[in-house]
Image (cartoon, rainbow, N blue to C red; front, side, top):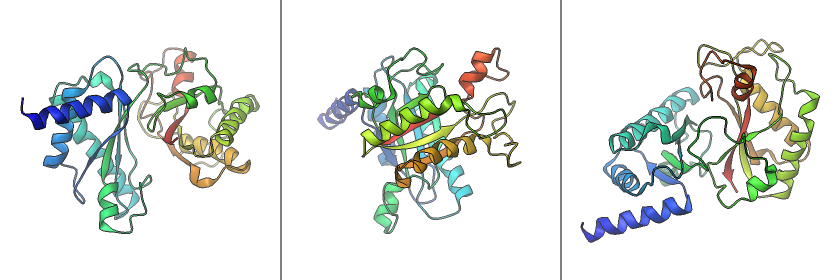
Amino acid sequence: MKPGILVIVLCWSLVAASQQPLTVYFDFNRSDLTPAARMRLDSFAQAYQAGQTGITLDGHCDAIGSDGYNNQLSLRRVKEVKTYLLSKGLASSVIASEKGYGRRVPVNSNSTEAERDLNRRVEISFTQSMSKSNPGKNDNRSLQEKIADSTTVSGTQIVLKNINFYGGMHRLLPESLPSLQELLATMKANPTLEIEIQGHICCQPHTGDGLDSETRIYNLSEARAWAVRNHLLSNGIEAERVSYRGFGHSQPIHPYPEQSEDERMENRRVEIKIIKK
């Protein structure tokens, strides 16, 4: 092995051990991998230790173009990275999620070409577990304990337990208040913490969003994520620390049709993604 290649592999072994995200960058308006991106992914694939942790793939764009176009472009970038990693021997089962954020989560202001270059990216983050089924089911730690855990890094997903809504609505049930207050207290105790609230729904044969019977708009998962965010903002949390997004039925834990109420409940969930800790 050439010394230069050895250095790269050793570096990515250290990255994997520390669970820091890996970022690959893209040319303007392109989803194909650059030679530099391929080199980074080659090094990652060689150093990745299967069985220890799963990964998430998050695609992003610069601010040029419409939301709809950038949403699709970011997903194409994720698909390119996934396809390349699979061709290098990674199993599809280690990929816990694949998401396209379009231009909604920039790392800077997009005011210069150099800044836009840094926003055209896919981030590969490490999860705490390779298991995609019912994340967090056997983890009885408090939310604050999970956030404080050294393995909780940018990109980590945490299911918020006992966040429930009236059927077909974005209106929170009273029984959700303790979990909402726990989230609020955690945000106040960690003033640098930034999160994305993610809504998911169950019981649909397609990946789209459901009908919110209150507003008659097909954005039920997004509206539910908004409701959780609104609780935080109404209680003093700064808006720039909390983004939100609805995934409809595109990321079910259990396939449709769900076989039990437990499976429906696990698909009908709210998660937070750590953006900055």
